[in-house]
Length: 217
Image (spheres, helix red, strand yellow):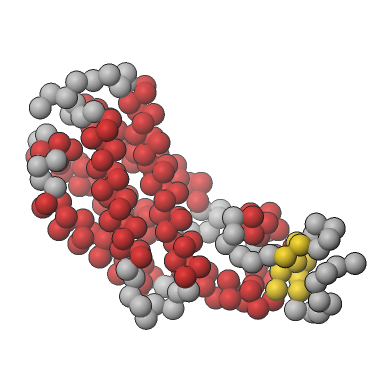
């Protein structure tokens, strides 16, 4: 017997997954990650409240379908990045780069920003390909920074700077945007996931190229 109230308001894992139009494995992962509320029967079976499913689906539609909001987020992030770079001009990861390398760095930053905008609204099936793109961006940046003679700490400072701006922009989305706090948590989590992929790839590049380099500045 279940401790949950006997009501059609509760659905099993398979029933809830069918209602959301996703594979049960996907819904199980969302529940395990805390993205959606879940209860367990004494026998260990997952049960989902219909109202929670409906709220989650509505938030997901907003996050996936509100292209205007995503574009506004990207525009603000790019604007904030440009403004903040002015104050970061004396940092090693900026000052040591020649004009051509700075252009390459800017190009990679724009690619990463665009990829992040896609990633936050991507389906589960699209995520692996996008993470592969993030790895490629990280690899290119790592090789560029290593070739410029930047220590790995300085190379990672640039990505940390960029990451902080993306996160801050996400947290300051317009108050009238119809997103609940849980949805914004998912948004920031996705940004973190993508940036983790980039930073780990940079570290991998330095590992592959002997990280004991000496700064040439």
